[in-house]
Amino acid sequence: MNRFAGDAQTVPWVCPGWVDLVETGKLSGACVVQSVRACLDPLLVQGVDTIVLGCTHYSFLVPAMRSVGGNAVTIVDPAPQQ
Image 1: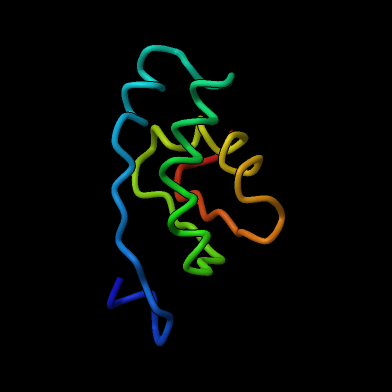
Image 2: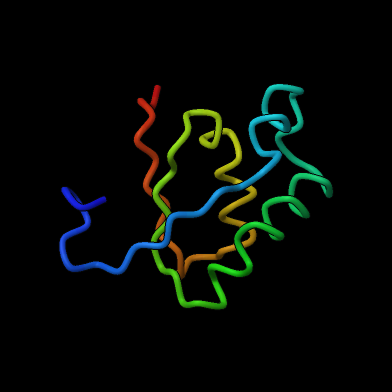
């Protein structure tokens, strides 16, 4: 974060259960949206406008993240896109 964030305020955040969701094939549906909302809502309340994914598993949850965060949140996914 020190190397790339510059003067941006950063908030390290852990999203428990997301890896388990992906590894069990749960990529959409009410339980996924509920888990994503529970993790992202506190960040959104703080005014976070950019989320940088720190795990390649999280790429699979980007649609749910977009549904929760809307267009006001930029999602940076460092995983290679195919």
